[in-house]
Amino acid sequence: MTFPSKLPIPSEVLKIASKLEAAGFETWCVGGAIRDNLLGVPNHDFDLTTAAPPPEVQKVFKRTVPVGIEHGTVAVLDANNQPHEVTTFRKDIQTDGRHAVVGFGVSLMDDLARRDFTINAIAYHPIRHEWRDPFQGEQDLAKKLIRSVGDPNWRFQEDYLRILRALRFSARFEFRIHGRTLDEWFKGIKTAKKVSKLVALWIDVGAKRIWLPELGDPSGVDKLPRDPVVLTAYLAKDPASLLTRLKCSSRDIERGRAIGKWRDNYPDPRDPARVRKWLSETGEYADDLLIGASEGLRKTVEAIRAAHPPLVLKDLAVKGDDLIAAGVRAGPEVGEALARLLDEVLEDPTRNTREYLLSRV
Image (cartoon, rainbow, N blue to C red; front, side, top):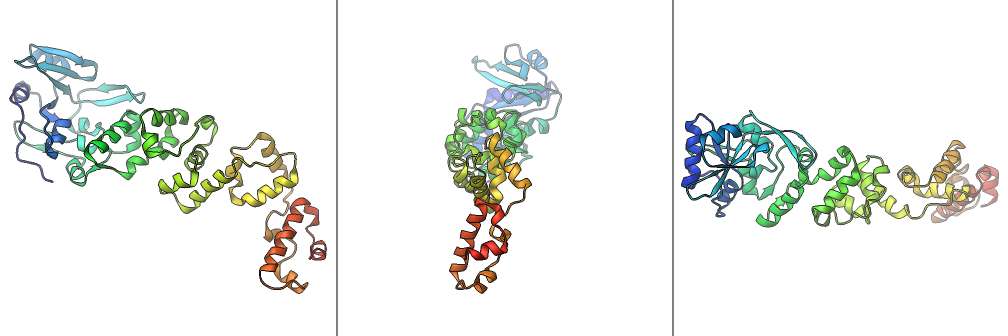
């Protein structure tokens, strides 16, 4: 896709732009009409962005409506009483995730940089017929791609409803959503003040249903550590499936699989033997699982670890060669015998002596 030499700008829009330019204020066409015309979709509702502050726009035109003057937008009425939105170049000063405080006195480039997606950050000068596309929105239109301007995490934090707009544009134009835009889930976990609010947002705007259908009950999520893998696994009904779809590493997928398998099967903390067996079976994933465990179990595990008991086969006082020398047939029987001996040692760690274990072969 390449930019056309001219766009069919409605005469009334052109009059407004010309008058602002004549008054000394740089003025460009922006927004959905630019995007749609490049896609060949009819749209004559062109918005204008200008260097003129709202009071100056009101001075230049006799008939205006302050439709969003605190955000820099003034509607200019044409001869047919049709409103045309004119918005001052602006940038966000602060935001609560939905409502922004904006500042004026910035450039067109600053204004385009605050927009949600690259396909919406293209500007056209209706008089000079020049284009400005600092974020390669035209290329993304050709690729049928929804991509955030800059860091998707910040774009979505600035205005949470941008997640919903990404879904809407994807459905309307049959565009795919850029992978980094989907990274918002993990980045959001790291930066959100409350993860529960982040989850509620994804549910409210419909993003969970489409992108993260495996997410379950978010209660208690704010008590979990900000490890994106662990937190996602505890939230998910099928952790391994979700982490696989989020393109996590094999190790992180296995961490999620262990959480899914064991989180509803914690041992009784009053039974040290059962806890030792649980530690042996969960292995390197025990610490992830202890995040969701009771305080009693965490204390029991702490006491067990302080005693350094044997928990895995390599901790046994005998090896496979010792069993073969004692008469066990080489092959699978050796592994089976070692597993039985480990069960006995987990029941009572004092049994982990060479003499006792060989006597049990």
